[in-house]
Image (cartoon, rainbow, N blue to C red; front, side, top):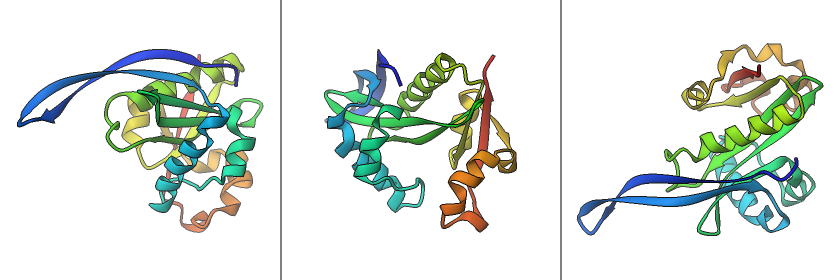
Length: 177
């Protein structure tokens, strides 16, 4: 993935000293670098322990680092996502996660936006994901589809998954214009 760098501001309400305060932060979205392997590993492991995301070892993250973008607030990695090519016309959003305390602020949507930009740059017209957060993806322009229309995914990853015969994730797809 070529260098992805953009800055945006998030604002939210936070309880401070018995009153609500408006809090705004700068968020930097950028391509992952070697120093991000450990925070990526910790974030993805947290989701994997809850059965929400497939685990990724530090070694795999190091090998696949160029596929990841991260969101950073005050120098801390607070979100991540990756784009994995499944075929000539299909990529998958993988390992999309946001740290606790930063959810619901639009960071996930900005990461998806960055991954869509990368898919367009690669001239790949279809982006899919398997998710438990269907409403998030619908809000970001994806449609719910049948998993079975993605044999590329089924035969590369699903055959190794413990949930293979009882998968409860929902497939979503966005076709780029």
